[in-house]
Amino acid sequence: MSRMGDVLAGFHAAWEFESDSVLIRYERGIRTPKLFQALGERRIPLTALEGVTLTPGKRGTVVLRAEPRPGADPLMEAAAGQLKDGCDPYRLVLPAERDTLAEYYADELRAQLSQSGPTERFLVDAPEVPVSFKAYDGKASFDGKTVRFRWFWTGASSAKWKAGDQSFAVSDLSGVEWRSPEVFEGHLRLLRRDANGGTQPAQADQDPAAVVFGLGYGPVHESLPFAAAVLTAVRSRGASAAVPAAAAPRRDPADIAERIRHLGELHQAGLVTDEEFSVKKAELLAEL
Image (spheres, rainbow, N blue to C red):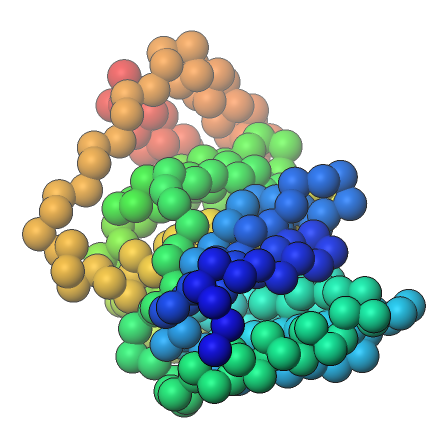
């Protein structure tokens, strides 16, 4: 049995072995993947793991990987298999000459794992809130109770402008769909409890419950922890159902005026009808 507090350091991270968990501390160096830097450190309970592997890596390295149980980690659940190997927070890359030491720790860790299969609840802590990030068509923010999308004039579709800025209480959501910004049509979509069949537009850029990613917008290290935090809150909403959602902050009058001006431009361009213009203008004025 490895001693509690033993540390195995690799490239970009170090694992500290404790009696009931593995504490993973990620480096903050310029070469470290941004997702690791954003995570900082994570405590992984042994009950959240179901296996350990040690395999040859690239260019004279070996890779020690802990295998999380399905449903144990909100980050991995949100990622849904889309993370590249280099951004996998459960991989520890070491120089090949340390393979004997790595094998020792792998064996010690395996000996302490006694559970496998899906878990009914998350066992690894979610990223802390509040969290926010800039997508291509809007800013997404989450305070632990409510997700808010505030559209950008330069990126949001006319469908989203017509719908207006959005607020979603955790209690109204059933899940989160994250599509990596590193693939075509990357986006973050909130799945609503009352949405069934085709009530949500197929295209994320037309769906007011989604923000779309673009070059430099919604990067993995910002949007994935966000998705994990929301997913955790959705799964545990029963325990916090009695907590009232925080009231939306009142807007700056100058901001309201600018949005009304932009709404007028959309109206003049024929993208918004007379009725829609009147309704949205009234909604904006009501926020003052």
